[in-house]
Length: 129
Image 1 (tube, one colour):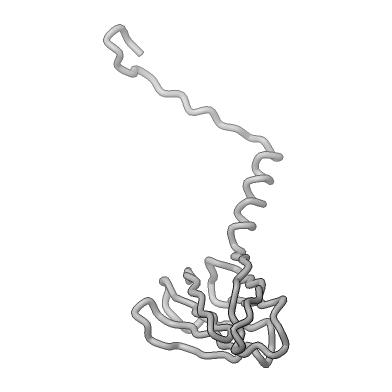
Image 2: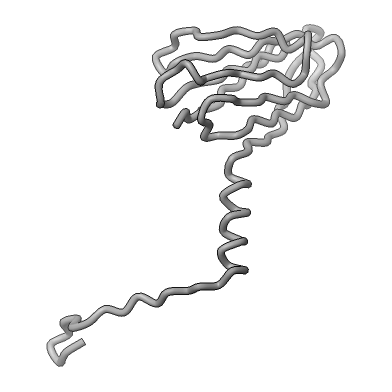
């Protein structure tokens, strides 16, 4: 800076540190996974908790939705929708607990996944690159 307080030069340090680069890459990988415990109410009004894992997000086409710790009696569906609410696909989660969702035929953009377990619905934002 000069006497008047104006910046006269700018230096940007370049860090070539393999450990830092590896840590940043690992952090980016972790951001591809949504994982959350979801409380839901059964048809009998009993509160239970399931674990929902969605990956990778953002996706280039294939998306996996895993639902664990869910009771055998629980019924539910996964609804893949556009942001405007148009239904693209509906899958039954009572049949399998790991569901593959294919967005390859869809244009890039933001999509919504509604996961319904018994009486509870949660919404997840999905980004298709």
